Image 1: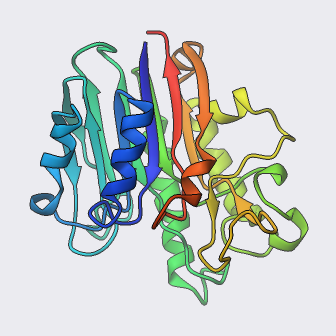
Image 2: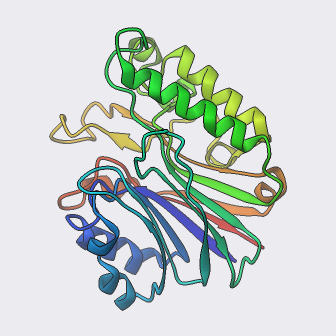
Length: 264
């Protein structure tokens, strides 16, 4: 059994106390973090080692973005793709070399895309679509059991958002983004693990804005975080957990951790 977690932590150094709490309570094998907001030499390696996580693949940059995969299982860094095409640290891929051998885990942080869903007036939106298109070309050639996890910054289904009608023109839930993400899904035949266990149209969110003092009031969430598996690997998934309570912890991220368990 191998358990993998994904969490946009929104600054790993600032939120190390809740990372420690999560790993102490859940004891997952592999943790994929997005938006670590630090360079590789600034990463809190010792704090993770004290918790039993000895293996690292860190792709960081100063102050923004950044991804990190930490593990109790031996791994080796497999790839770093610049799907943003501007040098930003938004991806790291690893290959498990201990239990779960031959499993590849791709950890990605897709750009948010700015506020206006029109690439003619908002370059960030165009960059997001281009990022997804580069990911799609890459996915077309995958030939190994692969799990891709992270903050995709898109909530594709109506039940992935608190109001489909009100968010149709809001970046993260526009028809164009949903269509573009669908092309990525089809390029490899990915299985959306979360929705295998929490079936549409059941409510499923992973992000709540900091603008609401209490995220539970109004429950205006979106499912921006995902765990998608190659078809054969998806069949080995035995459980999927959504840790909503973490959004209410002290100094929380605006995202929550997701965990999938595999019987490999």
